[in-house]
Length: 345
Ligand SMILES: NC(=O)c1ccc[n+]([C@@H]2O[C@H](COP(=O)([O-])OP(=O)(O)OC[C@H]3O[C@@H](n4cnc5c(N)ncnc54)[C@H](OP(=O)(O)O)[C@@H]3O)[C@@H](O)[C@H]2O)c1
Image (tube, rainbow, N blue to C red):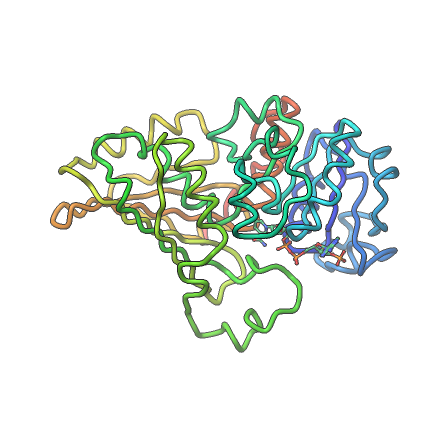
């Protein structure tokens, strides 16, 4: 059994980690922390967890957590993570950070979009935790920068196709719709019920911080400089991201060609499901699961490939992928603790 700690356990991503780790066959949840709920039972913070755990939220203590846990999940806002992660790495712990602090290879890119980085040295060894793509690096990593939710939904459909000659890397537009849990649990006017219910709005157009994260990974993977246009939208749902990607094509291609490239890339990858011909993903079909469903259509009259993906932002977009990375790092079956059957409806 590996002993796990979740720092920031009462936030939405942290609570999802607790949910998944409680039924993990090879992990024992040893410590959970929260400043606001110190001393409070987790099941009092989240009544759905009544009878599931007796754990109480503890005050953060690096020494106590390092003593009690082999793997540390940090589910904190950016900046808060970079101040505590180095301590655990120095103590030889495996760390999986859900914030943006260790996702970038280029510190100046992080600093241009976020702020001054206080642990730049670790960016060299941190591995970007897109499980299906960086599996071999994740196996040997001690620090994972777990991907953002939007980047996961954009990169998984796109990466299998960015090295093929018929794709125009200068003509890619990603349009995402996210549930409001993506913004976290802290009180925020923009995600209050009356501000989102019965509405649909674009936000942070041409300035969302996940855009440079996607560009860096796409550029690194393809070997060319890639900058995509990304527009996020907020929808009145609790969980889920649906992403539609418009890819310029330099020549006509067949559906069979695209399908076989996606199938080959994700062969033996249990959490990526390629939809059959004529079928497209729906956030309902992945809710509460670690699946990323991918479908596509070709609009030959406009020379565009249209890819559509669906994930649960809190699972494949955050906690589920983090646990998948833990499984890979510790040599457990990749699906351990993550084999929930989806809701049929
Ligand atoms: N929500 C998603 O869909 C999603 C998806 C992918 C990645 N992420 C990333 O995961 C991280 C957590 O997101 P979230 O949505 O769970 O946010 P959240 O609901 O706002 O939770 C943040 C947690 O961090 C703690 N915290 C806040 N400020 C802190 C500080 N300065 N020092 C120490 N602890 C602090 C909070 O608890 P206390 O105040 O009680 O300590 C809370 O438990 C973020 O970096 C986010 O970008 C989120």
